[in-house]
Image 1 (cartoon, rainbow, N blue to C red):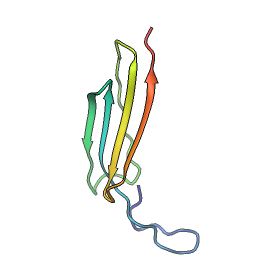
Image 2 (image 1 turned 30 degrees about the vertical axis):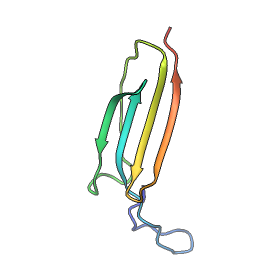
Image 3 (image 1 turned 90 degrees about the vertical axis):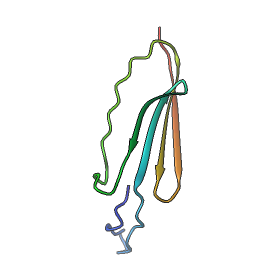
Length: 79
């Protein structure tokens, strides 16, 4: 996340990029949904504890105020 207040090495202001929504799902079922706002730290720490009972996919999605969507997923193996 960028607050829009920080400058790069050349002194240019870095554009504001704030995460507005974070979602985690396991096998397509929601595990966590968080709506963030301006008063959240520039680098928020989110912790999620899950105990899967079956193998599958943990998917993470977050959306910035720019509309940019980032998705990451990982296979979870139980057994």
